[in-house]
Image 1 (tube, rainbow, N blue to C red):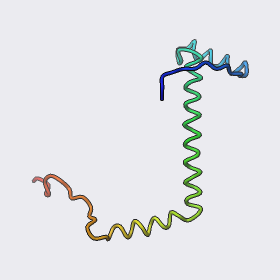
Image 2: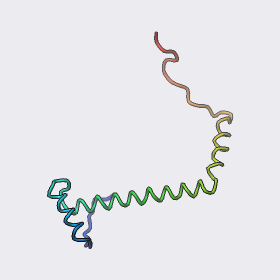
Image 3: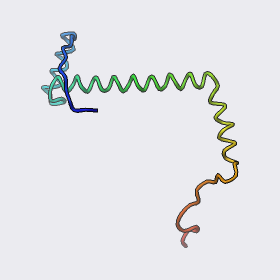
Length: 94
């Protein structure tokens, strides 16, 4: 993500701002702006995670995940497809 910052005005409850300012005084954050940037990043990450979960639920609800078992099972026995061989010594040292 780019380093360019833009200014924005937010409206928040007075009590919330007092709590944030307290965290800044305690040294947990350098500024109210830093707190807000981190809060926005956390919220965006949570929304993205939620979106992925919803897509996965729809995928499983449509029973598409069962088709994967057939595909994976078939691939396991295809000619020419083998599991990688372990490297190094084949026996444990005594």
